[in-house]
Amino acid sequence: MSGADSTTYRSFYDTPQIQDRLRLYAQEGELFKYFALREVNPLTILTVISEKLGTVPASMITDWRFRYQEFDELDYRYKLTAASVQPVTGTLFDYVKLSNNFAASLNTNHRLATDTVFTTAAVTAHTHVSITFSPTGSYLPEEVKPISFGEPDAAFEGNAAATGYTWVKIKRCHGVATATTGQLIAIPINTYLTIVNQVAKTNQRPNPPVSKNGKYLENCIQITRESYGVGEHLTQGGGIKTLLMENGDAQLDLNFTLNQTRLMKTIERSLVMGRKSMIEVGNESEYESGGILEFIPAANYINAGGVLNVSRVNDIISQALDTSGVRELYMFGGSTYTKYLANAYENKRGFGQNTQLSVNYGMQVNTIEGTGRDGIVHYINAPILSELGMDKQALILNLTEYNYGEKGKYGCFQIAEKVPMADKPEDADSYDSNSGFMGTWRELYYAYGFVRRLADTHFRVYGVTA
Image 1 (cartoon, helix red, strand yellow):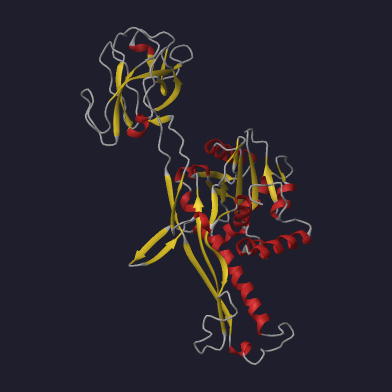
Image 2 (cartoon, rainbow, N blue to C red):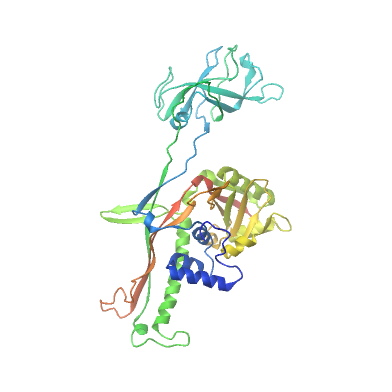
C-alpha cells in the first residue's frame, strides 16, 4: 500500500495473497497496478515506485502539461569563481564577487568561513595569513564578515559590474579589531565560503526577509496506445477450437495478455530511459514524459573505480547518503553488477536479505549495512537495466517519503495518471465493427506522466569492472 512498508501487498511465499491483491486491483479497476503485479518477470523499479509511493490521480492533473513545486534548500555554501580583490596595505577590507542568488541570501549578521585560507590565533601582520595549513602557525580557517552589499549586476565601490553577480564588501580575519601590517593575500579562486554563524546585535531591528523562491518543475503527459486483436478466422463462425483455445475469445484473451505484458515493460523502460520532449504542431501535440536517467545530474554520477569490494561499496553508499541527506535509499543494479556485489560480500557480514521487504515487494531485497553512516541502502536486482545496456551499472534512488521522522505527502517519483489505463473500446464492439472489418481490433490506452522530484538525491553508479 502507498506509504506503508509494513503492509504486505504481495507475498513472497504465499500465492493466495497474490491472488487477493490481484482480485482487489481488478475490482477497483486499477489496471496499472494489476498489470505491474502479474508480470512473469517482475517489473522491479516500476513495481517499487508504484506500490511504495502510489500514483497521482487524474483529479490532480488539470492539463496535459503540469507544474509542481520543488523543495529548494536555502544556499549556505558558495564556491568563488574569481579571487577576492586584495585589500589595501594595512586594511582588512576586501571585495568578493558572489552570485546574485547567494548574495541575496546574506546579510551583515552572517559570518563566512573559508576552506583555503588560514590564520594564526592572533593576527597583526599579513604574514599571519596563509594558504598553507600549519598546526604550529596558521591553523584556524579564516572567517570573514559581510560589511555592505552592492546592487545585482552593478558596479560597487570601484569594482566593475558583472552580469549575474553582486559585489560584497567583507572584513577579513573576523575577530581582529586592529589593522595589520602589509597586504593580505587574496582569497583564492575556487574557495568555498560557508555560512558558519549568524549573530544579531542587541535591540537590532530585523533584517530584510531572506527567502528563496521554491522552484517549479514541469512535466508532461504522454499518450501510450498498444493495439491487439484477432482475425476473421477466429471471430466468424464460432472460432476455431483447438486443444488449447476453445474459441476466438480465448485467443483474444491471450493476445491481450501478450499485449499488456509488452506495454508494461515498455512503460518501465520509458521510466528509466525516456527523454522529455514536447512537440506541438498546430493543435496537435506529441509529448514524452521523460525518465530517471536524464533527470539525474552529472554531478551525481559515481565512478566505482574498478572491482567492487566492501571498501568501494562503502565509498559509493557514503557519497550517496551524504549528498542526498536522507536516511534510506534504494539501489537497483544490473545482473552483472548484482553478481559483483554478491562476490564482494561473500563470507562477509553487511549484505543480507531483508525478509520483510522481500515479502512486501515479492522479490529478493538485500540490505547493505555497516557503512558507518546513519543511513541504509536496500538493494534489488533489476534485469531491466541489463536490457538497457546498464548491466554493470546501478541506480541509487531516493524512494522514501520519510526523512528524519518527517512524512511527505508525495514521493520523489510517482506515476501521474491523466487517463487511467483502459481496454478500448470499453464496450464489446471493435473499433472497426462498422467498417466491414471482420476481425476484432482493440487496444490498451494509457495517458500518464512521470513526476520527478529532488534530482540531487538520485545517483548513477558506473565504472565497475570484473
